[in-house]
Length: 119
Image (tube, rainbow, N blue to C red; front, side, top):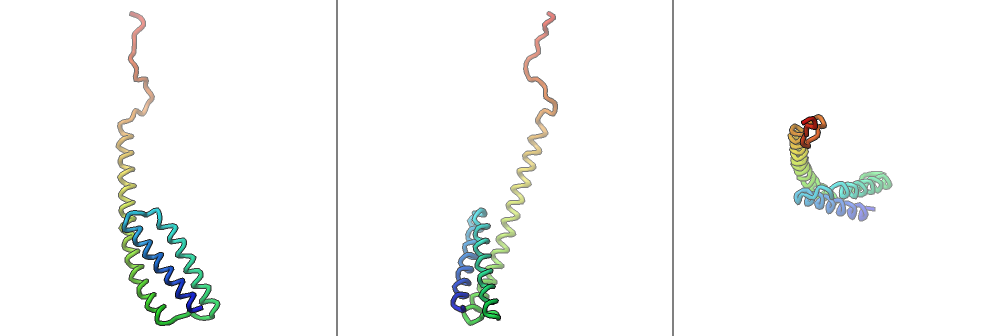
């Protein structure tokens, strides 16, 4: 079980690296899928610990967990920056839409030429 937990932690670490790379390269659409895969790893690790009756731990796992905490901090910082960028894009798009709507006709009026038929 310990070996299986180490394998799951390695996979979790690789998925975390992939999330960070996707955020840094501006590929935000990949992040939800990677997060789902990471959740599967977490649930598997929790099941292994529950099956063992205690938290399985050794030197490798402790080292991996310390590396993961620093990686998680980087992911959080990158996520905040990405959220700010996306928020700015949305705000800009809403502003553009508002400005365009200011110049549209509010009342439907024929834009054709009016000919007086009484002459």
